[in-house]
Image 1 (cartoon, each protein chain N blue to C red):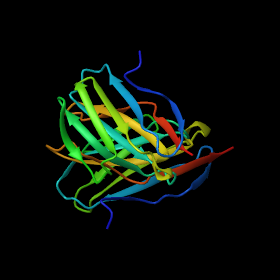
Image 2 (cartoon, rainbow over the protein chains, first blue to last red; image 1 turned 180 degrees about the horizontal axis):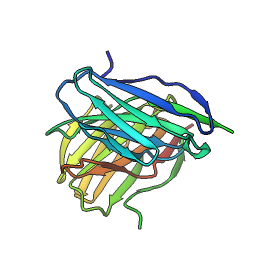
Image 3 (cartoon, rainbow over the protein chains, first blue to last red; image 1 turned 90 degrees about the horizontal axis):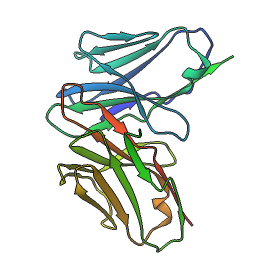
Image 4 (spheres, each protein chain N blue to C red; image 1 turned 120 degrees about the vertical axis):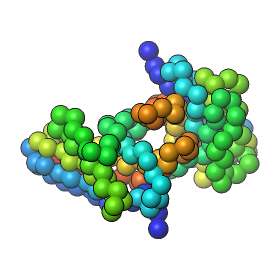
Length: 110
Length: 113
């Protein structure tokens, strides 16, 4: 089993739609969780960290479910500019190693 | 002001050559990383240095040798390049704090012919 798993997609959604991605992780000792966004031929950029109580940043909401070992990302009112690959990242506290999922590709269609 | 910078951005070379990629960060972070992203887009950790000390060394051929002259720089030297080394190599840095965020350089696209 991979340490971090994501549905690769692509998710094709119309503008204005709400879309959600899930990511599961295998190491129960994982303590830090992130969503990164990667545009084509660019570097990954931090979209948001994921906190235990869940957190929101504008149209983006991240949730953490420790019991089931998954994190989620919800994007409301999708924009064309949201088209990208979304990477789930997990890190164990006290270590330096970030484990990346393979990414979920999102295409927002006009 | 570029936080994490890499040179060169593109590198095209012949099999068997030796090449280096350089990385610098001005964020004051104490940990730097090299990642490889292959054609399937999977981002895989290769090495990490913390305060100039090697702390992560994944299963990477010993043709790859990282070097950290100081905590703001992490270079990657590759000997005897092979076709399978063609990929995008990303440098990243982080500071172990409550936020733990990792910042990436723009990447070096290596093509081995």
